[in-house]
Length: 234
Image 1 (cartoon, rainbow, N blue to C red):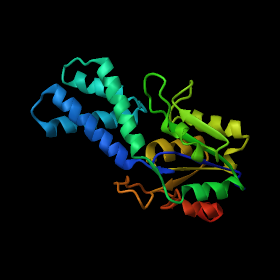
Image 2: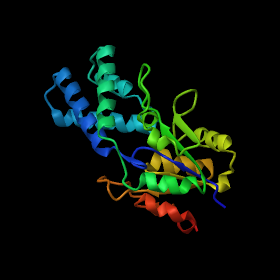
Image 3: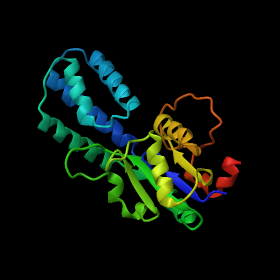
């Protein structure tokens, strides 16, 4: 019997894909122009390769990624400038983050039937900046637990410890829990390793290339499907 439903944040409860695309393009342009190199295609290839590597290692700091890009080109960089660019990056993402239309209604319905929690990875910013999720009380009010993984001595997803820590706080067992997330690596694989049931959301409003995986994990394309969780995981 399911007693708790856990959620990811980006691309699960909110659509921030346009924000990330805009923020990435702006950052790439700034770095490319500052490096004063000639081949945009080569730069973009190296940038994306390093970004993929950082993602695989759960290193979520944009500033650290950009430092690595500069190192690749044997160039130093101004740390204070990169911190400003990082703040600009997340402000762009925040500006272009919107709730999926059905999100609040689904959470309101589920909150009367299950314990709800959200686990999202840190923005990994320097200074006192807070994750965008914390600035959305109309959303967070539905959750008994909100965890920013990668902060306060918590490892970022997909480390299983953060998932298990959430279960401990909620007082539920793995067999009584489902987790809804969009990212194959950080969400689905992390939850499988933690030993409880994932639900992979590939929201129909997102325009993206989903990884081609053969899996028995249930897939949904809209949060409304969660109103009948038993039918999804049966």
